[in-house]
Image (tube, rainbow, N blue to C red):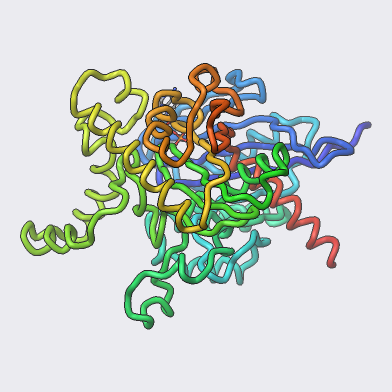
Length: 403
Ligand code: AMP
């Protein structure tokens, strides 16, 4: 009888979806192999499970009719049982979770314990739309599968290296002391991309790098010597550049105006800023960049132009923030897949010495800078799930090592 290999499940739980992936550590190397990935979408309305193998081929699909019986508990247990039954050669030994907020105290991934869950509960007011959904699966797994180790990985953690000045708002100090400051998000993506860049271009290890994570949610990060120095996202995931349905930075005076003149309440404002703005709000067409690029509606064109204008402006701001620009990196759905958007942003940054090579950009090569570009430009696919799996293995390795 052959013994099973250790495998790791990664969960990313949102308000209406549960994404999952499984990884195995390759023998005699630190590399991880993706075994499968999938998601349950439409939680709370019409739940739909779909999973793909490492070759991206559909492995299984399932739809539920009876939405009343579909609590998160049932769906999560369905995923775990399906993964265990599918990976016959592997044993899921631990689960790594994506958690949006670790506050100022949690600067690295942590093993899940009742104490940690209490600490993470106390951060719910900082991320009320995301944090509760991230925490729920940890409690469900702890109750139903108590032997399974769990590790929480925070989107904020990578930014814990930022200097205090980059984290502060010019508000009364008492508010800053209470935690009203910039935390930054997409940290697991920045950490992964930084590790890839440093592996392939160690000459940039001490350099000043701006990473543009441009997806449905978008932000940028200034990375110096491999450490986050500043980012476009702030106290919440609303700050910075426009996104699919989020506005990005808006003069706070606009919020005061809407409250005073339009009598908008908390929920209406939350809906406006999180769900009705950004590419969707400006275009009135779609939140999807691919749809906007294919549209001949002038409002769609305006949304694309505003997005590129604001991203380019943020690249320059972050270069100024850390005192240089030695490399520019594009990642995530738009950053990895849209040569037009990369070209439009680069065009606006030509005065900084950024120039992309048209053919390399179109072919989505790893290195897309023109030969006469003063700044190297890269396209590096992100993999937040892989980063979580690596953290999970490291944290548990440390736990065992220290036991
Ligand atoms: P993400 O949140 O990282 O999955 O990114 C989603 C965004 O990437 C959506 O706005 C998509 O329209 C966009 N996207 C994906 N592929 C392309 C593409 N080929 N061209 C333009 N945008 C794309």
